[in-house]
Length: 81
Image 1 (cartoon, rainbow, N blue to C red):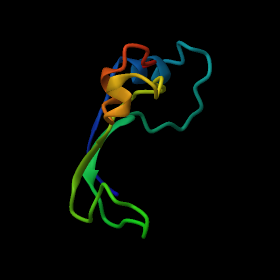
Image 2 (image 1 turned 60 degrees about the vertical axis):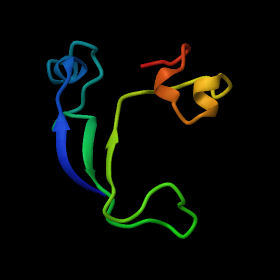
Image 3 (image 1 turned 90 degrees about the vertical axis):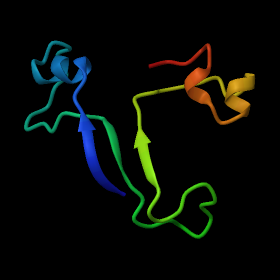
């Protein structure tokens, strides 16, 4: 995976300022990224080399609702951000 862009959101600002009292320095802020797949394992079926992909900040979803069963966890009503 080659990172092309990285967003800085408000949670990054909290970390930079140590407002949550758990920051560790030095720090590279940013956890919402977009890039290109550079290699895939032999069992990977949903991605190919060259695909543009993004990684968001979703932490958990129920894995049982209609949205989750359709690989659309970002729409889960029980999602944890």
